[in-house]
Structures are given as structure tokens and as C-alpha cells.
Image (cartoon, rainbow, N blue to C red; front, side, top):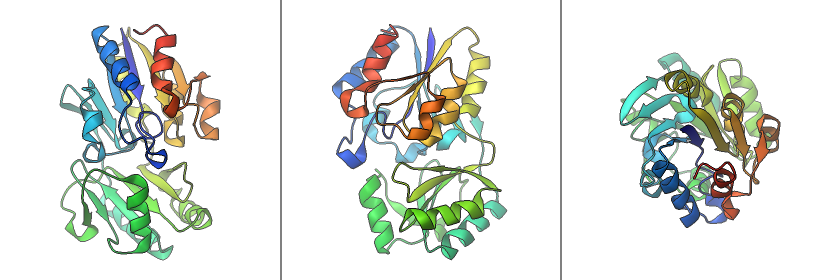
Length: 258
């Protein structure tokens, strides 16, 4: 049997290019993997609340969400990390200083620092997230990951430099936004835990972004999508077709996993 970790954005779907749901071949790949008793995990920067129902319907064995800050397997939480109050205050201060929008994600909700600016509208139209936004003032639960969105790459880079000492930053492919992760936490963190739990299982991972670097480095076979970020190529063992060309299906079929 194998453990297989599959990213969402740029791997299963491609929202900027109009692919909002898994293709028929991707759905078939998930079905065949399960029939062959492999364990498939969605491994995403998204919190569970931000994952579209069409992906939930793939019935994965578990979820690595918030870039590794939370791991669930068979509906049981096996690992979880969240920001402390001091870290949240720093994120709010830096995003305001550089006139960006701060997004904070819990298991159930996404919170925004500004719900009415043109920048937020641009973010919303780009990501098309499947849940409503709430204001930061409404937070009453643990926050596992943050995002920041700016008018351009230059401003985002300045903000990143302010945050880099306290947080791990991973730029999105769009380059004017990035994930803010808890220091030392990545998708590889829960994957390492699962490799110890299932010692004899071979591990595979598929992804496209900078937040997939540690994941691809940690597994036995790291597969980059054809549409991947340049920085991911060094971590990959091989490159498959793009998300629009059913790269997930083709890569897993190549490795005779179904």
C-alpha cells in the first residue's frame, strides 16, 4: 500500500484558468486508489472550510490543511497548531502598515481585515472561496494559517521581509500574495508523523507551489505538476503534465498505483 498526498490549487483544480472542480480523470484516480487500498490525503494550504464540496466528495482518508498546521485521519485530529495572540497582533500590524488585506483561517471560517476595499474584491474574484468572509473583530476560535494580499509584488516582498524572522512565508504563484505559516510548520510536518505511523507504506506527493517544497522533499516520490512554480522543480523527483492535462491521473497511473 501507499500513502499519497495531493495538493488542491494548481494540482486538482486551477481557479484562475476556470477549472473549479476535479476533472473526471482526477475523480477516477481517487476511486481507483481507494480500490487498491492506498491511503490518499488532501494536502493543502486551505483550511477545511475553504475546500470546495466537490473535493470533499473525493472521500480522502484524511486532510493535511493550513499548510500542515492540522492533520485529520478518518475524522480524528492527530496533529494541530495555531497562532498565539502575540503572533496575530504582529500580522495585523504588518498588513495594515503595508496597506494589504490580512486573511486568517480557522477550521470553519475565514476572517478578513477589510471586507469592502477593491483589494478584497480582487482577492475574492481570484480565489472564489466556497464560504463567506467574516471581519477580524469576530474571531473567537483558533487560527491555523494566514494569508496576505497586496497591490503588487514589490509591496508583498517588503511585508514578507518584515515577517520572515517570526513566520515561514510562501508566496502564491500570483506573487502579490502569500501564505503566513507558523514557524517550523509545513506540509512535511504531519507527513513525517504519518510515515512513522505507517512505516512500511511507500509515500508519494503531488503539488505545484512553493508551499509544496518540503512535502515533495519528504516523501519517497515527489511529483511536480507541469504548471508548477520554478522553485518547486529542485525538490521534485519528476514532473508530470499540468493540472489542465490531468497530470494527477497520469502520474499515478505511471507509477502503477491503479
